[in-house]
Length: 245
Image (cartoon, rainbow, N blue to C red; front, top):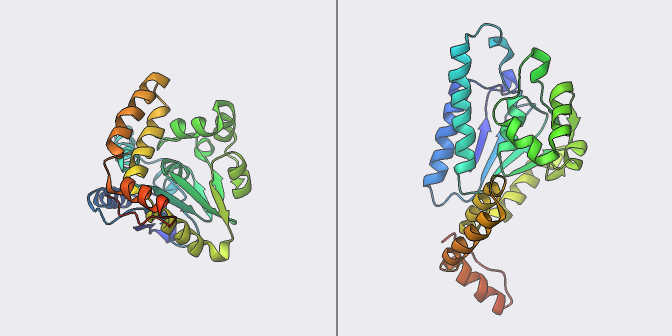
C-alpha cells in the first residue's frame, strides 16, 4: 500500500485533513489482509516540512493541544499496525515530518535527503514522538544536540547514526523503494507483525517480560501456515511462498 503526503505546495506540511486521512488509511491497512506492507512517501520536492509555519504564532493553546492530539493518534496507529511501515524520504524530513518517519519501522532515504528537528528555531519542543523515538535510536546526548541546534544532517550522517536503514540514488529511489517493499511483502507477514510488536515492546520491558512474551508468541507462530510453508520450503531447498496466514 502506497500512502503519499500530498501537499507539495507547502512541502507536505501537516494539516488536520492530511493527518486524519493518513490515520484513516493506516486503519484501512490494518483491516485489509491483502496489504502486507505500507510505504509512506511525500509528493513533490520533499517528504515533509512538518508543521505548517503559516499557522504558527496564531494558535491558542487549546488548538495546539487538540492538533497534537490528532497527530499522536496517527503515530500510535502506525505503531499499532502489525505490518511493516516504510518511510521513503527524499528532500527534507523536518520537524514533525522527521518524527513521522521515526515512527515507521524502516527509513529508506534518497541521496538528496536531509533530516532536521527544526522545532527550537521557532521556540518549540519536538512533538509527534521525537522525544521518545530519537533518544532510543541515537542516545540521549546526541538527540539533545540535534534538538538544541536544529541543524540538518544529510542521509549519510543519518545512516551513520542508525536513523536511516538504506540510502539509494535519487534517480532510482522510487524503484529501489518498491523492490525493498516487495521483498518484505513476500515474507512471513504474520511473523513480521509479532516481530514488530515484540521489538517495540522491548524498549520499555524487562528481560523477564520479553522472554515470556517470546515464549507465548512462538507457541502461537508455530501454528501458522507460513511457518509450515517455511519448514517445507527449507526441506525442499526452495524459496518459501508465504501467504501471510
